[in-house]
Length: 263
Ligand SMILES: Nc1ncnc2c1ncn2[C@@H]1O[C@H](COP(=O)(O)OP(=O)(O)OP(=O)(O)O)[C@@H](O)[C@H]1O
Image (tube, rainbow, N blue to C red):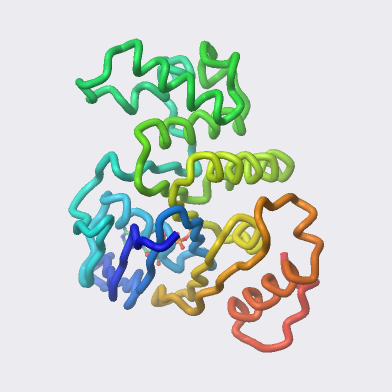
């Protein structure tokens, strides 16, 4: 976990909206090392999605330097797999075809190889037996599993996840968090995970960057030293609650905030 995968230096992003400047990100410095699970946590509108979109190459930054594996990010690429809150699967394709679709342009792979790879990743996310189901025949959690398989199928350097479980019910969300931890431990991928959920960030992450809003800045960096593999009941430990408390105090901007007040 030593090598730096993603390095963001003094990133600024200004949008022009109704002829006014909106500073979405100010002097954001962040890095992700190989195999590391890093979360970007903060209130609505603090610039989390904006930052993730810059890393995905879907938008450009105004100032700064953003590098993946030592190369400047200048656009989207297969070295990054992205999972959004909305599953964005193609409704007319089977689950396996949705996953294999990500490999569409890869001429070095035969159709059979693409199907085999898709089946491998569907199995990894617990969807063996559902490969010939259409998205409409699957639950939200299952569709998001397909989206995760699709993002992983070309072995990206970095997995980018923007509130991936935000549309799921509480129970499914918990199951998906465990599924993601299992997949991450198996694949040893590096992850940038955007969330506004404190418990989710602490449970999943090696490191958390807490952001503050207007302008979006990194307010605090927290190393989560909870043992792995993690199971849900770690959330009941004193250490876990202490991490939550530290983050909530940062988000609320005041000292001695009682944990019980968190939503
Ligand atoms: N295309 C755009 N044009 C103008 N302003 C934008 C644009 N995209 C984002 N913004 C502004 O940039 C700021 C950061 O937005 P962003 O969506 O990154 O926040 P966020 O932390 O991801 O919020 P949420 O958790 O609600 O998704 C907000 O003030 C938003 O209004």
